[in-house]
Image 1 (cartoon, rainbow, N blue to C red):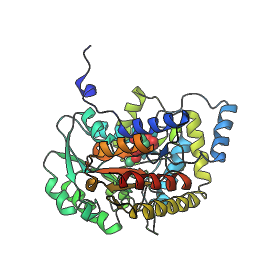
Image 2 (image 1 turned 180 degrees about the vertical axis):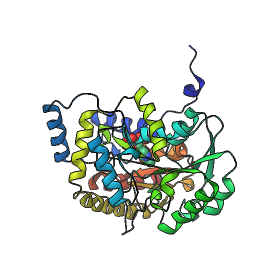
Image 3 (image 1 turned 135 degrees about the vertical axis):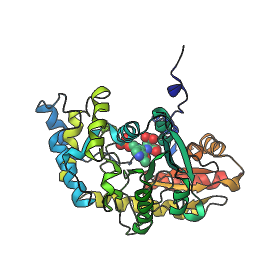
Length: 385
Ligand code: PMP
Ligand code: GLU
């Protein structure tokens, strides 16, 4: 069988694979502690489910325009203008099958053969594979623990060549949990503007940010909306991962092109999910509680990991991930994760798939009991090494 090499060379998604494994082991009755989850650990709010049920009962069950319903795109545009200070209208938005498809549409629309894409490393697993699919060339920009895994504007400037077309930014960041403050973003913005490159700003974790920090959207800098493609969605901010709904915000010329991709691939996002997303915006008050709960769980995991020998955790400023250096254990990331699962039934993600050998990603999207149990088991595991 001859497979298209662009597809056969893709790596599977370690995050999806391990999350599915943890769920399977749990459903088989195994006492697994899942610290691998890439999704909030609570149910989608009832008012969102009710809106979806109403959409079904009202017969709102047919194709919608491929870029999304006008009412949803208008609601998204209002949110972006009010909360994110991004100048836009419904014409700058396409609704996509999860934020993942927004990223894919952005990359596939902009990047052709040999265009260079700068990806800060560690990175979320899917970015490099999507660039590979588009035929572009990846240029990793390594970040260091001593700089809190943030890119430095001077390093970025050095990495840009005549072929560089796009920088992928993600903050709050998966897997490191870091986020950028206003001044750091501004210096990245100055470089992007000067060098005339596009920026894909994946802000899917914007609502999960701690210690009183504020989120600043990249496209809110002066004129940055013309070269920034903002990705966001409902998966993390409304606990709607299974509903598969996100969105891409960009200059209208880009959106017109990207919507052709939707025409010929997914047609549109499920009409029911779109109706549910409209309702989500009408009642976002509960998000403060979600954020506060995650901050408490972050603190719990952080305190626990600080008592663990041979593990050095990076305090998270956002997301629900904590990034841990495990090099002192003498194990590789994969050995660490698989031995911890085999011996103590604790699931974590080895960070080699994020381009960071010697690290693992722990998720605090788990119950307080699970986090406590996980820490006890990790301590035992480490004491036996
Ligand atoms: N970006 C990042 C950084 C993510 O961690 C994820 C994982 N869900 C996504 C995008 C994709 O989100 P969605 O589930 O909405 O496709
Ligand atoms: N983004 C989540 C994670 O990193 C969910 C899985 C995925 O889509 O990769 O775990």
